[in-house]
Amino acid sequence: MSQRRFAIKRDLALLKQRCNAQMIIVYEGGMFRCDEHFVSYSNLVQDNDVILDVNTTPIKIVDAKDFQDTVFKQHRMIMNEYAEEYKKIVQ
Image (cartoon, rainbow, N blue to C red; front, side, top):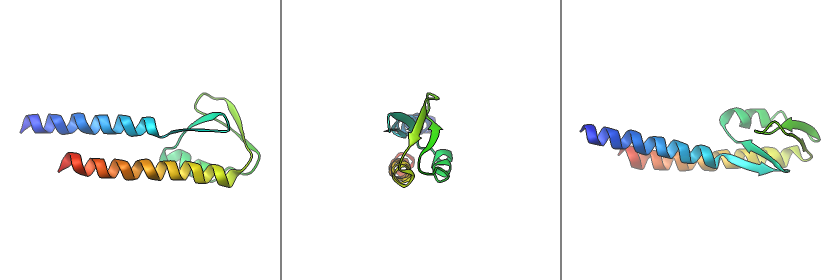
């Protein structure tokens, strides 16, 4: 029983690590982490706004709608994958 719990904790930690790495996107030469906070923040960005990427590099977002869509799609894809893999691990 304790080996099973250890395996579940290990597998969930690896899953979280893998999904966190996949949340990084490159857009207009900047790197952005598409977590739930950034998804919300991206909805405030307007055309030609300058925002900071994960390396605090200023990046001009020319097309805000495209940026928002890209961030949201990446986040949704990773969260769907996380949910599917999570179910497999804990069953």
